[in-house]
Length: 180
Image (cartoon, rainbow, N blue to C red):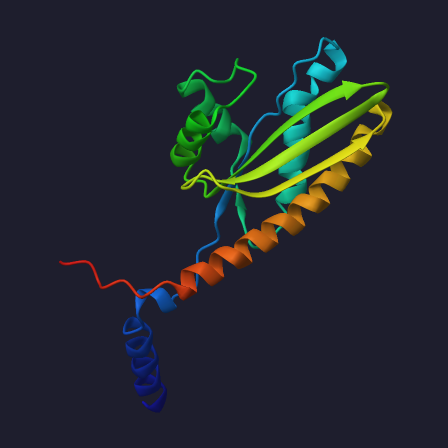
């Protein structure tokens, strides 16, 4: 009987917590295909491949949920964006909303003078604000290593962005409950 009274007290206390005191849900992150304007057919294949590798490497972050590649493709097909090389801020925000993603990872790469450069931005979908931008440069033969280095930098950036977002949410004044 004593444990039942304790359980009722705990449930009552949890139910009476203000909404702002509840822990933040894991934000969802979508990794979009990379932009590439070059003519090298082998490098063109990296548009999707590099995004897939990043998705896999970011999936081990416990603080975020990563959008499934199949779901992303459905949304891109629905918006007729899968064939386009670039995402403008408006289309990126629409994709984010349709996916329920708080953050989008957008990227581009180019080759010059025997090197390849990959740049990424982590964009908050609600505001369009870039919360992190990272890049790596190397030889085309080092693509797998470059992807791993970029993934490590992005992980650090996402963790920092989430910490900042949590601080902002906790600093915001509590919202009154919605009328019933």
